[in-house]
Length: 104
Image 1 (cartoon, rainbow, N blue to C red):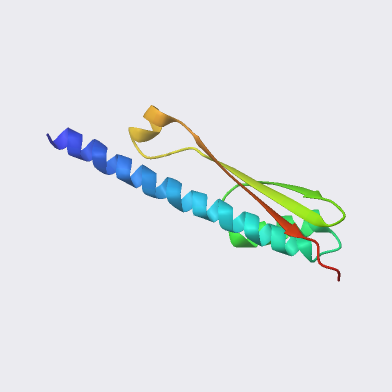
Image 2: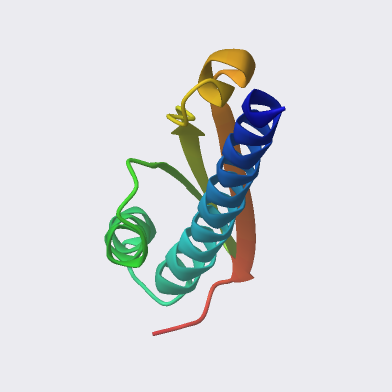
């Protein structure tokens, strides 16, 4: 009985960490898109804003057009929780935000 409870508790911890990381990636994408929308150098602004928003090793992709800028943030979560990590493997979190470009 106790091993089942331990595995369930570890599963809940893994889920909580995954949810936290998903929120962090979404926040980073919003912050990056907002910074890119008001900057003359959208890629550098997005990278800087994302680095300030989260401390996770994320990948930032920026695509800018004449009226919009799109920032995609991706994080591969290794799921380091004992037992559960071995069962489910890494989880990829991705968020994409598009904002209208604002003139300086």
